[in-house]
Each structure stands twice: as structure tokens, then as C-alpha cells.
Image (cartoon, rainbow, N blue to C red):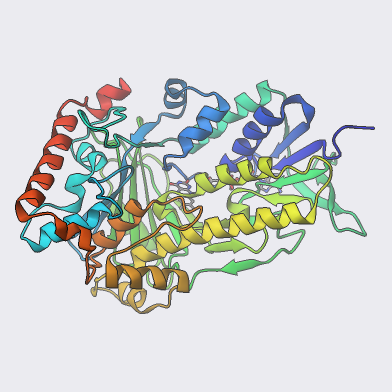
Length: 495
Ligand SMILES: Cc1cc2nc3c(=O)[nH]c(=O)nc-3n(C[C@H](O)[C@H](O)[C@H](O)COP(=O)(O)OP(=O)(O)OC[C@H]3O[C@@H](n4cnc5c(N)ncnc54)[C@H](O)[C@@H]3O)c2cc1C
């Protein structure tokens, strides 16, 4: 008897989701399983998705892809955080920088100390205590494990890259390790009459492809998970007001910044993502408040260089598939749900989806308890990110357009309402289990959006005024010294 009941894995889709899935599966399962990937050049991929968050480094490490090879192949750059412009008020600016910020007291987070110093008249901004933000502002980058001369955390980073080049790199990687790539369009899906499980995919050419386990990476259409299994979708558009995007790359301005810019506009926001060979730009907007023409004009007016392509318009429905795993189909990537790209989390969700599948891998047949656990964890993970993104919209003070006024009035999930209320009253914020965003990330957005707590932790008041001022000055000086010693981002990239 065969050792494994689930031996044949068939992936539908060759976008970022399809090729990340193929690469991780073949790396971990090796030759014990037959892995096939079907993609259709005629259909193509969504063609966006360029910014990431730090756990992407674990993905490349797990695959054994070294950083130099990766950056050269994908025209990648380093990312220290996202600068949010005009989100709180029309002329405001803050950064959600990765990594540490300040120095905590015992059982008391640093932002309480910062707020106390503010009460005493300090002119420092919260970001003055983030090594990442200070390096980003000066377009510098280095892999510093610690702030020089201290044991405080150093630089934490992610990447910007050309996602289609990343998919190409992973396609070569996967095929070299045994993944079979099949070009063709799936036109029919054959299900088992009793169980409803997917048994075969029929291509336009007439070829049939079978499988024991199917990974649906077919993008927003959800070819297997929705069009075949009718799994259902939880719509989050009442909380995430944007439903459209237009992307338009342009020539890269110099110097190349090591951070993403997110600039709020009248009815949405524009992204600017610096790559080695171009700048990725786009506008995410609400079709209720802005036409496609207005969005394109807003984006074109804010391009930092000459456009390099035709605009790519995309419509989407934010939300999540009710089950990411249904019968013998696991949805990974856009087929599993979509949160808008404000915090660059989609590729991370792909990575986590495949890792979770590998942890729950159904070697001896699909068991309901494993499927339920997979779906429970996936739901928790995406809801945490959803709340973090909604916070940016809800906590705006902007009154200049009907869009932003509606954002302030809208209902929000109870989980987020509780978090905001706790922070407002007490200044406290706690990280949920499995939330990819740390307390420091939440603090930066809460304070950046000008939610000011009514209370601060008593521990922050145990410092004398002099001790407090010294602490702030010393921390800031240490950070500035560390930044001074760093090379420019372009010098680090050697381009
Ligand atoms: C405006 C916007 C900006 C984004 N920015 C970011 C970002 O900065 N960072 C980030 O992490 N994510 C971002 N994302 C999300 C990111 O683009 C996706 O998560 C990522 O590209 C994965 O897409 P995918 O592989 O699931 O789908 P797709 O790229 O759409 O790929 C689907 C694949 O399925 C194939 N396919 C479909 N139907 C069939 C069929 N019948 N037969 C055969 N093959 C078929 C297609 O040919 C294609 O290969 C963004 C998304 C949008 C909409």
C-alpha cells in the first residue's frame, strides 16, 4: 500500500500565490509527492503586489534563496516601513516603521514615557525614537542587529520587489525541483458525485489533470473554491470602503527611498513603491466617491516620474472566503479573500497559508478536525489584519470630503472598537494572539492618527523630569549616531 494517501497535489494558477505554494510545497515535501501547476498565459496574473512585511525574509530563508540573488532577480529594494501622509489631517505625516521604538520600562511600554515627556513640553515626535524611521528619512540602510552601543533592537526590514519577477524566480526554482508546469486554461471541473470533492480539471486542449488535493491560486475569481464549491464570501466593504484600484508604474526618481509612501487623497489613497528599475504607483479608491477617470487623474498628477505603461484598472471586493479549506480544495492568495494593500499583507497571507497547510498536511487523508483548525487560524489571522487596516480609515480627522466623513461615521468591528476604546482611556494596547502586527505597530498608527490617550501608565511618572529629559535625549542621540554610520540605501544595494 502507498505510504501517503494524498500524493498528487494540483495547483491552479501561476501568480505569486501559485508559485509561492509550489516552491514551499516542493521544498518541504520533496519527491514524496507529485506536484503540478496549471497556469494560463492567456488569462495572465493580476500584475500588482510589490511591497511586503518582514516575515518575507523567513520565506526566502526557508526556500534557501539568498538575499543577493533575490534582490538582483526581482529588482528589489529594502523596505523600512510605510509613511502615511495626510491620513489623520490633510498635512499630517507619520510612519509605521518596522522594528523597535524607544526603550520600554518594566511592564510599561515606551509610548507612555513619550506621552509623559510630551506633557512636559518635549518637542520630540514618536518617530524620533525609531531607528527604522530615522534611517528611512535619510534614505539610509544597513543590517544593524542593534542600535550601536546598546542591546536595543536594530534594523528590521522587508522588501519591495517586482512580483512578476519573483513568480518567475520561484517558477524556475520549483520546476528545477520537480514541479510539473502545465500551460492551459481550465474550462471544466469534475467533482465526485457523492462527496463533491474535486477529481479532475479539464483544460481547453481536452487534457484532464487529476489530483488528491487541489490548491486554488486562481486569483479573485476563485475557480475551485467559489465557482465550483460555492464556499461563500464574507463581504467587508462596509468596513473597508475602497473597492477599486488603478496601477501605473513610472520612472524611478533618485535617490531610491527605502520605504513605501501611502498618500491619502480625496476618496482613497495613492501608493508609491520604489524598485531598482521603476517606481510602482497606484491609487486605491471607492467607486462610490470617485470615478475611474478621477482616480487616474489624481494618480497621474502625483506621479514622481514619466509613466512607463498603460494604467491597469482593478475592481475588488474586500472580505474573506468563509472557508479557506473546503473539501479537498485549499484557497491560497486572492482566491481566499482580499484585504486592500494598505499594509502590504497579501503576500504574507499567502506565505502563512502554505505554511499552515504544511503544518496541517493531510498525509493520510483529509480529516475534518485538521480542516477546521486550518480555517479557524486563517480566520483569526485575516481578522487581526482587517482591524489594523480599518483603524487607518476610522481614526481620521479629515473633514474635507464625503468619503472621509463617512469613514469617521462608519461602524467598525467590535474587536477594533474595544481596542481603540482601551487605548483612548488608558493608553494601553495589547497584541492579539497571532496578530502579525506588534504593539509598537499599533501604537504608531494610533498615535499617528492622533488618538491621544487620556491616561498614562504610572510607571512613566516614576522618572523625575530631569531623568525623563535625559532618557529622551540619550535615546535620540544613540539613534542618530547609528544612522550616521549607515551607508545610503543605493550604496547598500550596490546599484
Ligand atoms: C491594487 C492591488 C495592490 C496590491 N499590492 C500588494 C502589495 O503591495 N503587497 C502584497 O503583498 N500584495 C499586494 N496585492 C495582492 C497581490 O497582488 C496578490 O496577493 C498576489 O499577486 C497574488 O495573486 P494571486 O496569485 O492570488 O492571483 P493572480 O495574480 O490573479 O493569479 C491567478 C493565476 O490563476 C491563473 N488562472 C485563473 N483562472 C485560470 C483558469 N481557468 N485556468 C488556468 N489558469 C487560471 C491565472 O492565469 C494566474 O496565473 C495587491 C493587490 C491589489 C489588487
